[in-house]
Image (cartoon, rainbow, N blue to C red):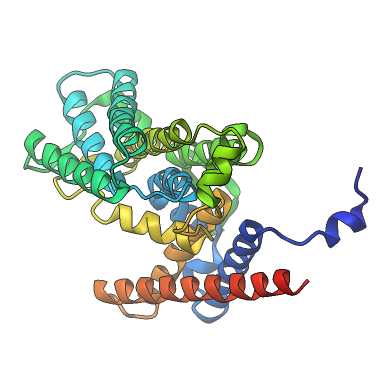
Length: 344
């Protein structure tokens, strides 16, 4: 049994180091926003709004993080999410059941995950090509289902969507003197549940160790007796399944769908994963870091808007700058770390 001093002296792994950097930058950035911009940043509801607005992105980013840890990529997640939203809304508006709609969402996501996983793992087709085709197919199917915007008219789903958890002691006092309680949507609870499940798999399960192993060195993974093809296959199955969950959560948040739904979600998920410390080369990453990557990405966008730069291109420019900064930071930190290891 290790003592507390021995535990503290242990060097951080690459995953832990990059995750710590991300969390530190997010905390510092939010603290600066609270001091300089004040406004909504002083209220707990600001954080809850970030979670409410990005619950679906957190879920889909968890799936993408798994794939990126294995050294792969999945750019179909936004298209699959969009297809799930449109399919479920049309089903509910034609007298469907909410529970069956949830199963439909999982089924669509699982179908894409199975196909992508089979083509990439067993037929050894490049992940970018396979998932690019999946993205176009999902976007095309969304348009075929309906070119017109759709809104959920199902009464049971409307009641589910309007359900929120109120936390009075984290609320704030409005200008009229009324106490406004903090509110969390049910989708956030789903996102937190998915985050915890993926974290436990990556941290403690043999499958999670397999993801890291094949992302770090596929040859070594084979020598350790890991079934590389099956492990990579399961990574894409997880990604597809979580895309289905993400679509249902997004539908709970917006209650509407159109042909351009979840546009750019795959790019935001990749950016959040990279900012959170996941390397595109594989073998390094953590969903806790990805979670803070989503929050960091959202915070910088809110800071830009609060600064008076309301044009959408400023948010894109800032996101690109943040991404370049984190990639450069990761490269410098890991390069210096590897030099120290070689020196010792």
